[in-house]
Each structure stands twice: as structure tokens, then as C-alpha cells.
Image (cartoon, rainbow, N blue to C red; front, side):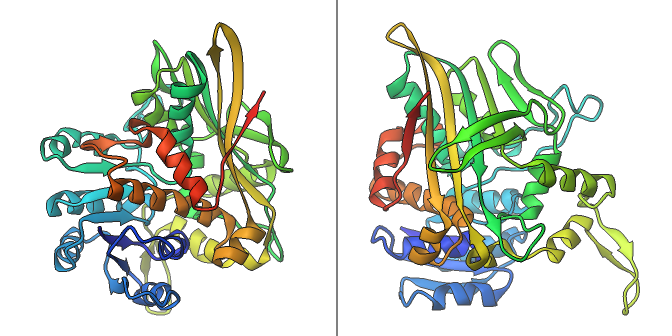
Length: 404
């Protein structure tokens, strides 16, 4: 397997550190718009399977050329969702397997944004599913931690733990703190704004997909391994768009433990128009320039990849499932916890980006060995869960299950 990894930020760099310990691939080309980031990621490894290149992820022709020049048969997308479609198309043109951790962007319904779906997350990719399937090519979408591992948990629960699934709720929470910052998101603020301020999607059998108000249906969820109770709210996320395609359940939701302060900050950004992506004209020393307000917010905040030394605590990703087994009601929470102290000591990567990064590497290894195979545009739920969960444990990062 020869891999083109596009994106050498926090998650991309963590991917290289995890993959360097595994023998399943022949080469990995690390490409980024900033060549210094790609070169730094490669230089830290002392592994001749890795090389660095510069590429603009939005330049489909340049990405295609890079895939062909290095004879890569897999494109792993570690950029933010703005670049999903050009990378997705470049992989198809090259005949390469495609894998991402976040799907194509949504667009709210123009008249009823908090009732009906407009363009849903991943719709642009699923619109090309027949083309991928006809070519016998695989696009494995939403294969990070959430979406990704959370979807694997949903498939595992349906296959092995329940006879009938009534509700699947992905629940994400943490007790992470960052020394020296009043506000320092542990993940890309660009992506966080996108998913938190868009209308959340819920799926119900018989009704299909529908939307609610941002931060709706608050609940307190008790997270394991010392994290404890965290208030979680509805947030737009790919799992709700993926799980119902392959797993039968009466209701599917995604709720994120953001905290009151974080929610109020996001609301303020929205009130001021600082969540917008369309450029605005601002003065500069060189004259008027156009900038995206959301990009300005991102530039004013610390890079999440650099926060590891200041960060303390644990992050938990998991899937709560309620249903029936052997005629009796059952309720479980399948989860994966990463302690920042461990991930920093073991890999030099902070917990949130490491937890996101380990899952696509596990998936790549399963594809390389043939344990996972298929064609079309497929989510993690389309594949057997047990091989993934066993290999994740073999990577030294076991998952857990709590009966409720």
C-alpha cells in the first residue's frame, strides 16, 4: 500500500507517528499547503517510507498529479471539510482508494433550517456512490473517531449485543483543561464552529432525517474513567447521517459535551458574524483585503496541536445503545478514552488529535490486509466491527463497555 496523506496538521502528524510503528504499508507521502509542516512531520520519524511534498488540497489537478507521480493507491484526507470534494474527486480520477474523517459540507434548508434538512453532510459524496461502485473503487468516509469508531461501535452493538436496537446516541465528553488559556479548543475551531452552529440532525424510523435548533435537548451524561457528568447537547454530526444507512434503529442522535461557557462563546461568535466563511473586506497596510471571519477566529486561537504540554485530563468518545436482548431490555455505553498524559508521553500528540488519528490508521491496515473490502461510498458501519475493535486493542489503545 502506497498512501498519500494530505494534511500535516495535528491529526495528520499524529497519523504519521502511529503509522510509523506499523509494517502494513510501503510508502506514505505527507503533503501540506505549508511544506515546512510536512517536512517537520517526516523529519521527526527517521523512517525512509515517509516523504514530504507541498500541495494545495483545493487544487484537484495538483493532487491528482501527486497521486500519479508517487503511484499512490490510497488518499487519506486529514484536512478540514472544505477540501473533501476536490480530494474525493482526485482519488476517483486516479483510481485510488479514498478515506476521510469528516464528510462533505451541509447546507441548511433555505426556508425551514430548524425543521427540515437541506443538503446533508455527505450528500455530495453519496451522490457519486454509483460511480465508485461501478468502478470497483472504495471511498471509506467518516473514519475518524466521531464519526468513525463511534459508528463501528454502533455496528458491533447491532451485530453482537442486541436483538433489537431502539436508540443509538453518540455521546462525546471530556474533562480536559488547558493551562494559560481562558478559551482554547482542543480541536479545529473551524470545524467546531461548522458542526456546532449548523442545525443538528436527528433520525427517526418512519420520519427519516430532520433538524432541530442548535444546542437542543440538553442532558447530563455520566462519562467513564473519572470524567464524570457532563451536559451534552445536540450537534450536527456525520454519525446521524451514516448509522441509519446500515444499522436499523428507531432513533439516532449525536450529543456533544460542550459546556455552558463554550456554548455561549459560540453563540457570541455567531451573533457577531464571526462564524461566517464568506470573505469580508477589511483595511490593511497594503490596502483593502478580503478575509473570512472564521479564518480570522482560527488565526487568533492557539493551534490545537501545540496544546498538549499544557493540557490535562481525558477525552471520551462513545456510543450509547438501548434495545432488547433475549427478550429483556438492555442499555450499554461502548467507549474509548484517551488520557492526554499517556498520548503525550507515548506519541507526543495531545489526546483529542491522537484519538482521531489512530482510527484511520487501523482502517488502512484492515484494507491493506483485506479484512475490510468493498466498493462504493461506504461508512464504517458497512464493515464487520470485530476486526477493527480487535486491532485497535492491538495498537495499545483498548476500548470499553459499560452496562447501564
